[in-house]
Image: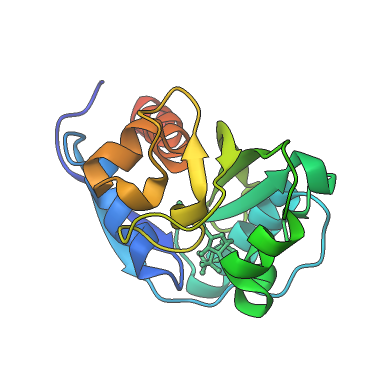
Length: 194
Ligand code: ITT
């Protein structure tokens, strides 16, 4: 990495769990994450990348500084990719229990968690970085760590635990967010001229 000094990078999200995780993922990188508590615009689109890119462009314009956002999608194979980019709405409505109910007696529990980071500077085009983890939806909720769908998502190549049974340090070793954030910050440090 070219620069060893601390770079301040602004992260726009309404989810404090994401801030905590991103800070933990980047603890050994020469960057400092600052939170912008900004609700993203309601963008209807069928893919997470498009939502993230458009949100980042909109917020960068609003706050007049370079920022990044992170959008997540949960794609469940037996449900043809549902809830996908609608994961937040589905979480607020039918929740984890509703998802378990939809998968009642379903043996194929494969799912993918996708994290898309979109970075944008005012008047520039946004750019995105993707992190994906494959896994399965557990038969029941397990674990009290984490947030959102963590108690029902079990990453493949993991120790057979759900994210909800992992400490944050353990989760970020496997998670979609761990991957997207590292890709983004490696690019940022290589490309910034500050
Ligand atoms: P933003 O303000 O950053 O958009 P959000 O919580 O609305 O925060 P998303 O729309 O990206 O975030 O998240 C979609 C849903 O997926 C939402 O219900 C989250 O709680 C959930 N989610 C996101 N990341 C997760 C993770 O690492 N583990 C479990 N659930 C997660």
